[in-house]
Image (cartoon, rainbow, N blue to C red; front, side):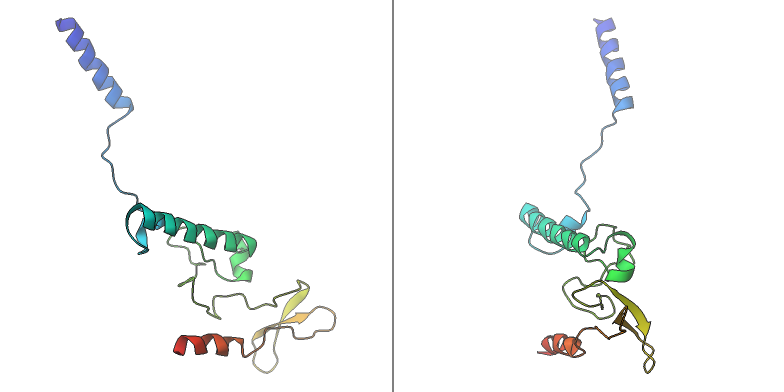
Length: 145
C-alpha cells in the first residue's frame, strides 16, 4: 500500500514537471478590448470588424512595407505598437490615407514647383491625376455637422 501511494505521488510530481498547472486568465487580444458590447457577442463583433479591416488592408496592398506607399493600415495585424497603423480606422485623414489616383497604376510622384508637395502625374505626359482638391473639404464638412 505504501509502495503504491509513493509511486502515485511520484507520477503526480513528474506530471507537474512536464505540464505545470496554470490558472486561467482572460484573453487580452484586440477582440476583447474595444467596447462593442460585452462577453462573447462583443468579441464576435470585434472579430468581424478586425477581419474586415485586415481584408481591406490586404486588398489595398497595405500589409508589410506597402503601408509606406498605400497609406496606413486599418487592422491591428502587426500589434498595438504598429507605427504604420491609423489612429482611427473609421475617420478619413489626408495624412494617413492613400493620396494617389483611384484608377490606373502608371504614375509617378513629382514635386509641385509652387507648393513643393508630391503630386501623382502620368509617366508619359506628366498630367496631374490627383483626386479632386475639394474631396477633403467635403469629408471634413461632414465632421463639422
